[in-house]
Image 1 (spheres, rainbow, N blue to C red):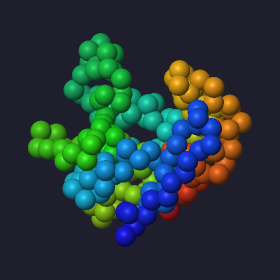
Image 2 (cartoon, helix red, strand yellow):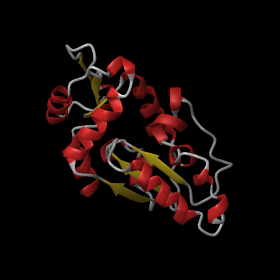
Image 3 (cartoon, rainbow, N blue to C red):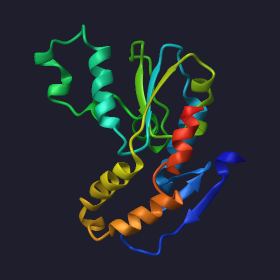
Image 4 (spheres, helix red, strand yellow):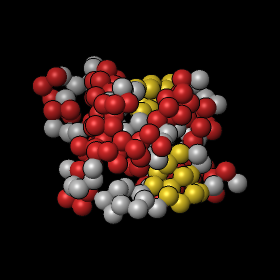
Length: 191
């Protein structure tokens, strides 16, 4: 089956993030149960709004803008949740937050329109999203900026501090980076 199509990619460098190829995109193995649960159980509503992006491509910015627009009549600027909360805490990731550890969330308490985010490529979205009238807002960024931003993000962690930018660049060019290959991700949403 397609969802069982997993290829190991053991990177030779200790500091390099290790990904597996799952359903045609690269991700950490811990994400696989989350994606499977999301694909199997998520039921999209026609007024859902899905914010989609590759990591380090403007996700935080897009989440802040979308939250502000969706809640412009609900909060005064002085008491907006964005003043004290990260946009990632206000708009959850489907595959990383809501379906974490393969759990099945209860969406009964979330009023419509619901606002979610994902880094998954289009082909890996739950079929209910593709078959509904849900709106998908996609953001991308110059791939060179994505590479540099990703490298800074990853190397800010002590266990990855020695990851050379050249290795990050080569891995990106091979498409062996989170939710990649980059151009497949962009084109999937473009089509």
